[in-house]
Length: 69
Image (cartoon, rainbow, N blue to C red; front, side, top):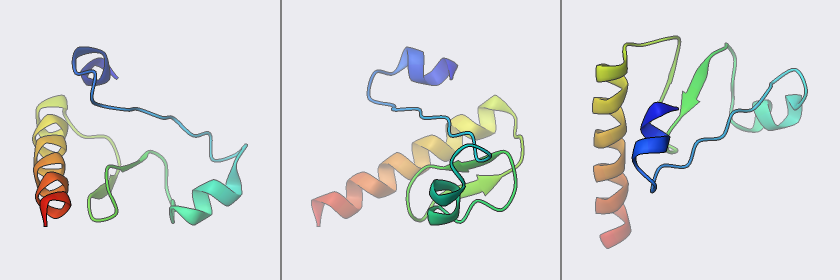
């Protein structure tokens, strides 16, 4: 959440899977926590902030490259 505060282009949404099971199913969330960055970048479990930042950067670069095609 801290990164979403620092970088205004990051949109963070927290979904309570117990309250929204259909939404969780549409994103194929099988365990908590699950982070979905893009269709191709997702992971489950807790990871250290530096690794999360690296994954977020990688996902955003890949997404930008796909948009430019």
